[in-house]
Length: 457
Ligand code: SF4
Image (tube, rainbow, N blue to C red; front, side, top):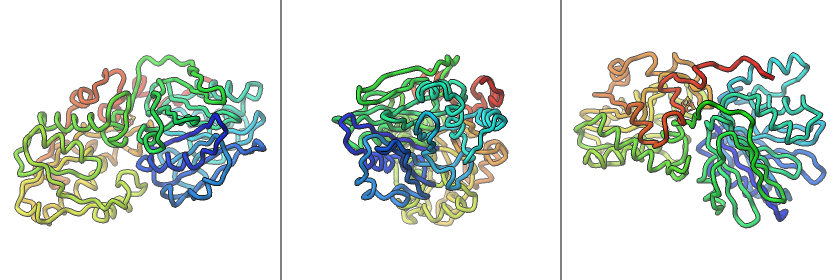
């Protein structure tokens, strides 16, 4: 998962510090690296990028001194391409039509086919990210304006892309025709903003104007905002349901829905579908917190914040190696012994992906004296990899794919294990089934599971 942010001042005021603040609010979407890009007064593309959290990768004071009235930024955790410095975004190039920089959230599922096609025609790639195919597709259409080349390039892509693109004198936002990842437009005074999530618009004091429609391109320049379409008509939409379950911040709005409200509903429906008579409901902090509150409210069992998270550490799921994940649980989460000793606990978590965190936590809770540990998961079992921008690379690594519910319960050492159903997930989100992606739960990938390696250029 990644986060993108962009700002454009129609009055020519500097915006790089605004972009820094936006990225800071989107930190939960990627912690491996951060970067910003802008086009300077001599039409050269400029980037500043670094590894790690936003405040380590970028220098806020330095950015505040740079005179750039349009800029984009990106926070990254690697899905396609690995975490090397060459893959840190925004990706930028000066091609024959001018400078261009791209920040991308999502995963282009036909990227390897497009890349092969371009390499066979002489393209030399600088990174291993899927995003770079967009730059090369544009460069292969030198007879078109940058904007026309960009629109035509996006038409050739399959899968998930929410983009912030810096062109000369313009900021462009684009969302794939299937609507996998969120993207919102905001405004404060003379500055337009684009952001992966509305919570970052709140931080910079902007009003959210609206979310981009799937397949929409917004062109922001001195004249204001213009809306274009990517000329692709998909049969259905695929808004990522995992955004509601785990990724997005609860203070964001997606598809007009409060992530907090949806997450609480997930917990309530879980309490109805997978009830439990424990002494108290607790959660795996922080992403299980709101669902646990919903579970407690619906079940009438008291909620206790019995597991404390070190708030200065990152989220386990978005760290790249198994070794770090294994270390992560104890480093980050510590139960409160006095609340746990001799108690039957209902522990609500948002998902079980590899199973490592759940197993370690159940172990720890038993070590601290819990008499029973009932795991309740506020999403259906994750059985299939995601090809649209979430780091779940192989089926073998997914706990629910290699073991059924009973076996997995034994594997993680819980007293019982219960999941939300697929129908309840859709109902809690409140959107029609044909607008929501549930592929990692159901295996129903876009267009009947094709990986879209075939090419139509
Ligand atoms: S497969 Fe799962 S994580 Fe990936 S986009 Fe679909 S719902 Fe989201």
